[in-house]
Amino acid sequence: MRDIPGGAGNIGIVFHDDETTPYPFVVDLLRSVFAFSEEDAGAFAARVSAQGSARCGSYPEEVADALVRVAQRRIEESGYPLRVGPQPGRGALASEGDRCAVCDRPGAEVRLVYPGPAGYLCDACILAGTGRMAAAAEGRPFRYIREVLAWYFAGVAHDQLQTSTRQFPGHMRADAQVALDRLMARSAVRFLGIFERHRYETITFAALTDGGEYAPTVAPAQYLDVDVGEDRPARCLENGLWLCRAGDLRYAVVLSFHREFRTEAGLRVEVAAPAGEAGTALAAAVFAEIEAAVNAARSYRGKVLSLDPDIDYRGRAKGVTVHRLQPVARDEVILPAATLELLDRNVLRFVGSRDALRRLGQPTRKGILLYGPPGTGKTHTIKYLASNLRGHTTLIITAEQMGLLGEYMSLARLLQPALVVIEDVDLIGRDRERMDGPCEESLLNKLLNEMDGLKEDADIIFVLTTNRPEQLEEALAGRPGRVDQAIEVPLPDAACRGKLVRLYGQGMTIDPAVAGDAIERTQGVSAAFIKEMMRRCAQASIARNGCGQVASADLHEALDDMLFTGGRLNIKLLGGTGP
Picture 1 (spheres, rainbow, N blue to C red):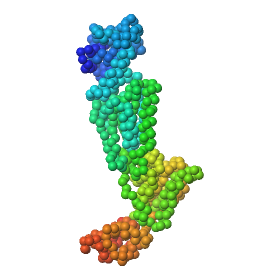
Picture 2 (picture 1 turned 30 degrees about the horizontal axis):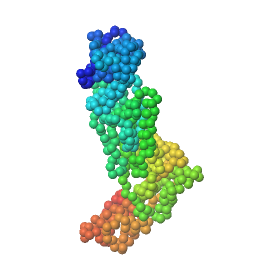
Picture 3 (picture 1 turned 180 degrees about the vertical axis):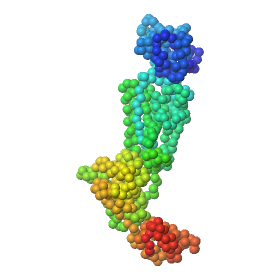
Picture 4 (picture 1 turned 30 degrees about the vertical axis):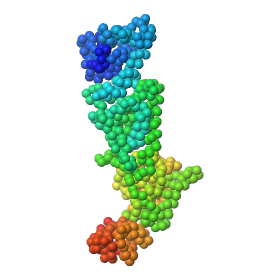
């Protein structure tokens, strides 16, 4: 029974048994109009049947007026003889000649009467009373979410509300939160967090109106800090209910997550509003603003990203990881001059001419294959491209993440211009005759379909890397439009080895003769080998004199450990072929 605090003037509402009205109708009326739970409604209907009548609650005058009015209208529409009215002695139906005590309106629209100075009330004044009840819900403490909604939508039956739902990618929650914050700053009158008893179940507006054993309760606002690559993380809500107004229109917005096995949890936004054109238009406006923010994707645009897979991998992503890479200048890329020029011409200068190419009807997407032995600097080269492609978002996909390729490509289309890097593509893109089974071939087909499915004017560059170009499938490496330019990242020549010795020897004192000896004795090794060699030279010099001055003996000790003492396997691991 609902005994709502409101002073000595509270009005009781009584149900009278007529032995004709179906039990399910009474239960539905109690749930939709009086906000009873299904269990409470069933128990009260049984009590009415057993006793002949029973009081369902005590309410302030304006609330009782509204509830009786709505209940009587529902009963009249159904054609059942059920009687619901004020508690005997506290009021009765008005006659045609009576006038509203508030606005003095006469006639058939006058419905309810109470003894004393209150007198009769008309429909308009009853509706004004429900508005005051909604206003009370904006500040009154509640335990259950259903109680909040019953007060806020007082006078509006559940079947007179409609809900609209839109789902957004879970990894775009930061941008969606920005839009929600902006929307709610204008229209929300109250926010409430929701306690999720079962996190695998999706929170819906309909579920929030339920009053069963596990009725959702009010909870503190629950935030998750999401790293978007800025000084401060984005604070994103886990769930929530906003009570909102647009002029005289009351509506609610529910934020939750839709969780489904083997898929990424989707951000779910539901708008509940009175049925009709106004409610439909309002929901469309809410969704349009959120979609605009997600499509703008300002939180991640221009950054270096990868999807964060579930630890218990099921082919889904938990969110986005933002990589903070150190910028790489052109003079820090240790490549032969011809190779660096080829790279600049096919990537950096290509991007600079995109607008002109588009005007001439030429494609603006491109595929680059970087190949060469391990440790030659392919990853360093990608960092150089990511640092110098202004306004581009870089997506880094490792071979084991190819199951997420569809999600990566959705991000690439959304965040373009984009640089899509697929590392060690030979692991899924090798010749079909060398493949181990259908799973590997399906990943290759998925990659080919994604590359072919891009529009000609897509501002997306693929950069594929491999240590074994000879193993690549012909359909990937031998077809223009997928890969337009192969660029070898070779073992460093003498000039590059000299630059690497100076680069990785910063902070050390190296005699020119020692540096020359290092260049001569490292023919055929990788950049990674030289980096490790200089670290060992530093370690040997510290042990010898403690000052970081590299002598010939330090170099000989380092090379002896790396090329001779450790055996052939050690040479291979370090990226060398021998002196």
